[in-house]
Image (cartoon, rainbow, N blue to C red; front, side, top):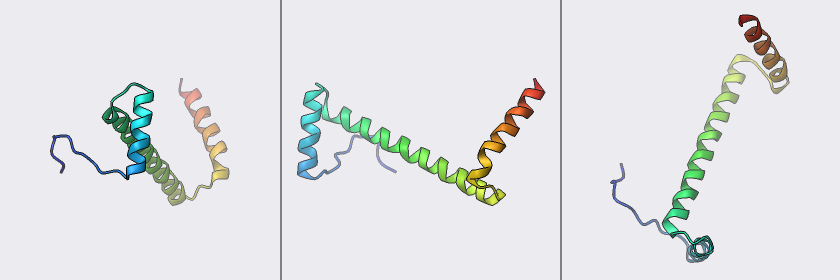
Length: 83
């Protein structure tokens, strides 16, 4: 596990220069821009894992993409009856 201290990841020189230029343009510290980028990457990664999990679950249940609209309509109909 990484230590709680800040680390200094290495970036290709050209990418670092672009990052520094973007940070200056937004009047933000490079670390803040980099942290935002990492958060967005991790969020996207989390969504992709969730999507893949859903696809696998649908496959395991024998559902196809063509079933989705019908299943949503059925679920909404059942929820409406419960109210």
